[in-house]
Image (cartoon, rainbow, N blue to C red; front, side):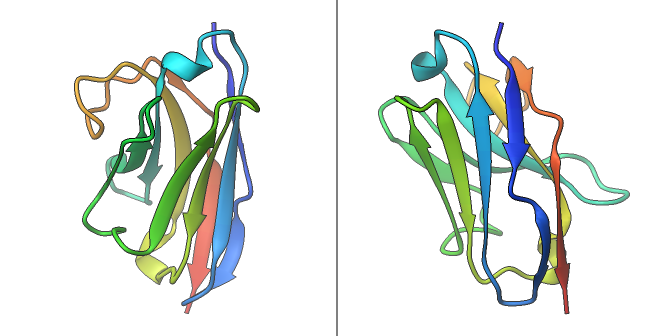
Length: 121
């Protein structure tokens, strides 16, 4: 069993930066693909970024060049550095772990409870 706990959310101004963290428990962390998804009000959950155990990463077009995913397998941590945030980045951000068919598919096995990010203009 793997538990994921996100932190670092909050309110940030348009153009600002924020770093989200995801702490994972469990022995097989290093084998998982780790992903970040988000869900804005009245919208479906959407892929943001993901990284596999070799450090290969993928991003949604909407965040490319602004967000960076990283992971520390020794500490069982995953991070999402968010720079140049926009009001449309406002959402609940979820950390996910598993072996999805591809980075942006939603078939991750484990999910965190989410952390709210609000970007004010």
